[in-house]
Image (cartoon, rainbow, N blue to C red; front, side):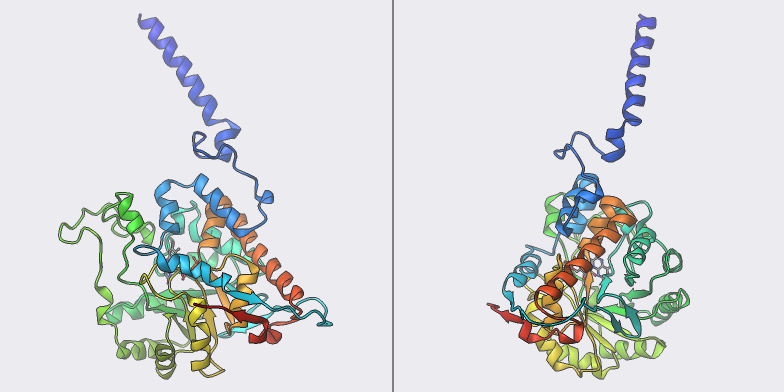
Length: 393
Ligand SMILES: Cc1cc2nc3c(=O)[nH]c(=O)nc-3n(C[C@H](O)[C@H](O)[C@H](O)COP(=O)(O)O)c2cc1C
């Protein structure tokens, strides 16, 4: 009997070793998922295809963390729908040569008006986390990366991982010394600009609750609070931390900086004007990719109102919902000077690491050039409102 058991174990061990070294497992984490074959990177031609590969490769919780929007996800859906309500009006005779897409925002020169949005915890998507994101972005025509306050690696390590410019995102901290310490670290790491996010400190995600991840700390955030026991008085993680925000803090942060500051999460003309009056150099129109207040408007719908409210010297940056080059062209036509990409980059990273990030950005760059050519706009200066007809509700 004993001898028979040992043989059985040996056989099972042999099978295990065979599976571990099989090509199947190398290309796909879980061979028993619905997706029976994960395509190679060269097979993917559009950004949304990277989502399916990310889904196939990630643990469900990491996929969901990237996918969801706040509460019932009205704004998450509306961000996408809004692009359908904008038509492109082509000009057939433009008489121009290859599209010139170069731009300069807040002193940072760019080959394309595209940056990586700040987003938390990239090591939940790929072991090399933000280091790989920066490498991939850098390889895609030196795309600048905005490093999240909740990155999985220290900002100096991320900045040193690749040569493309890095900006750093701040979540307001009530403690001024802590604020200064964080800003000093980012500046010492070479951050060329600071992005202060003001729109998201009190969201919760029904999709995560339905997944029974009650009170789970957000993925990433340098492991912040992971595995913390649920607070029985606040099982839905509804936070109240932003209630202290005030203009004095904005002034104090401005004074701490020697580099330009953009304020991220602005959705009204009134806020935009006031942030400029308080010394902000750029307005970043965003609703956090539908992860802030549900029933916020889509960012595309409020873009022109904000562009019109601020002086021409103040560049307006835009994100939330961009998935292809014509989306970028629409945002530029409505007045954005540059756009940022959140989920698309995360899908690229999860799907193929640094090369995935590079490919996602290169697809968007190529599609932008194609859309400019098709609409007869040779450079960014020639992209204006006459390029679009809007049918917002
Ligand atoms: C998973 C995830 C994490 C994010 N983390 C941050 C963050 O740490 N700081 C921040 O300012 N914005 C964060 N954002 C918002 C993004 O910067 C950006 O506004 C949003 O992703 C843009 O929408 P898109 O995903 O449709 O491109 C996050 C977004 C996602 C999807």
